[in-house]
Image 1 (spheres, rainbow, N blue to C red):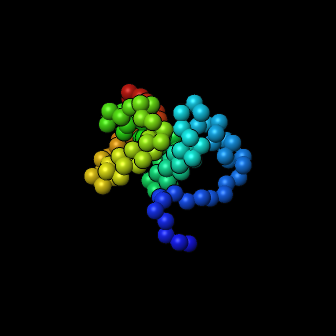
Image 2 (tube, rainbow, N blue to C red):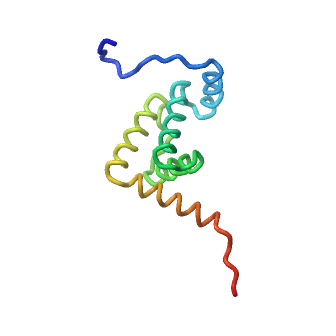
Image 3 (cartoon, rainbow, N blue to C red):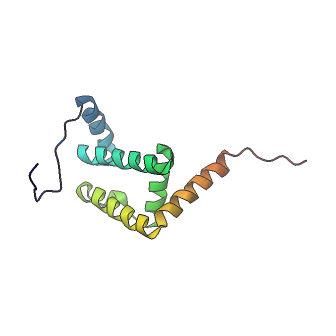
Length: 118
């Protein structure tokens, strides 16, 4: 493979996956590639941290809210790069791990059965 100035690579994906991404991307105002990259990011976070996809999605949303990020105000072409940059910065500083830990603890508290008085 020759080196290229482009940061992109082409891959073959099943047509059904591309169609699912197209359908999921439209309401989020993402491109098909952006939707697939979002799914890959969720999967990577879930795989690396042991979170469920729902917990990873909640952690992303909470992190964005805490950072004052208006995801809908960012053009789709820029949003994935911006998200990746924020994750990289948060990961390097430890903020992402703290946000994930807080999300998991919050979910555990919500899921814990209420204690009864003796």
